[in-house]
Image (cartoon, rainbow, N blue to C red; front, side, top):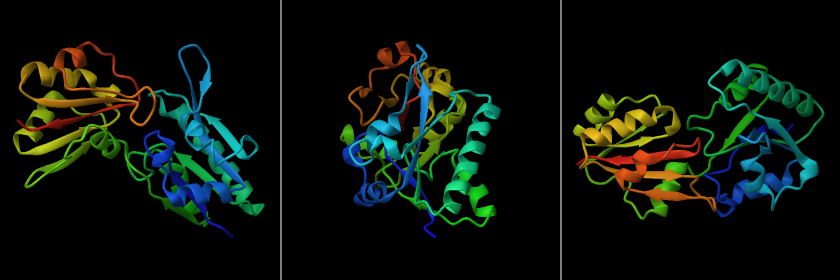
Length: 232
């Protein structure tokens, strides 16, 4: 039986998929993809947009994933993905679970992977390009150099934590940035000399990048945003 593949899709640009990812998509019988509803109630799947060239609609299983802090609603969706994975695996299907970004970096879909392993169903991870790597490349940045250290935070940072890390020669990547935007803005107000690269929708036509503090302060950070902050 073929293991279930948890496939990293990268930040959003189809051309950033690996050759291995494309082959996996072409070979799959079923590809599970997340989708969310926008403010107008229209369901959109960023993952579907990324893989559309290599995966036709009749092989897709789309799951609406609530963008809520209430994890109970999200857990119900993951329970459904788990049960469908078990059923399809037992039917002999080649299954791919598509994951935006990289499956090893703050991907809550690991909950499903761990349950499958507990049920003795084999799984594999297929690596992708993390959004902060793609962001640094798009801006021509050296992410870290010489004796700098890289710290990646999941959106639970406060201004004092950020200041302490930067003061000890850490380059700080903040993912899930919308969850701690006030902390980042407070840091920049207190330390206007700080260099902060702010990104939205990396790898998509809506990509946005700025280092201007006034622009960062005035923006409402969306879900698909991150920043890279350098020590002074």
